Length: 239
Image (cartoon, helix red, strand yellow):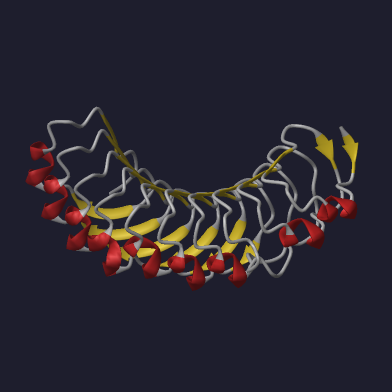
C-alpha cells in the first residue's frame, strides 16, 4: 500500500485494531486516529510515515499495543501518551524522535515493553521508568542520552533486558544494579561509564549476556564469578 492514511479513518468508531504494517505509507499519522476510543492495537510498523505524533492521546482508554517503529517520525514523544494507562507494548524505535523521554511514561503501570532505540533522544533517563512494576524490556540504544544511571534501578526487579548501548551515559554504576534480580541481558556498549563495576553485580544470578565494550571502567570485581548463568561477557576496550 502507498499514499497516506486517510483522515476518514476517524469515522470508524467501532474499530479495535489497525494493522497497516510493512507497507509504503507516507505522510503523517492523522489526529483522527487517536479519537477512536475502542482501539486496542495500532500497528503502523515499517512504513515511510513522517511528521510529528498526534499531540493528544488521552481519549484512548483501551489501547494495549502501539507499534510505530521503522518509520521517519520526528518531533518529541507527546507527554499525553502517559495517559493511556492500558498500554502494554510501546514501540517507537528506528525513527527520528528528538527531545527528552517524558516522565509521564512512568504512569504506564501495565507496560511490558518500551522500545525507543535508534532515535535522537537526549537528556537523562527518567528514574521513574525503572519503577514500572511490569516492565521487562527497556530499549534505549543509539540515542544521545546522558547522565548517570538512576538509583531507581533497584526497583526494576521485573526487568529481563536493558539496552543502553551507544549513548553518552557516564558515571559509576550504582550498587543498586545488583537488585535487578531478573536481569538476563545487559548492554552498556559505547558509553562513558567509569569507576569499578560494583561487586553487587555478582547478585545477577540470571544474567546471560553482559556487553560493556568501549567504556572507561577501572576494574572487574571478583564477584563476577558468581554469575554462573553468564554465557557472553564482552568487555573489549572497557577499561
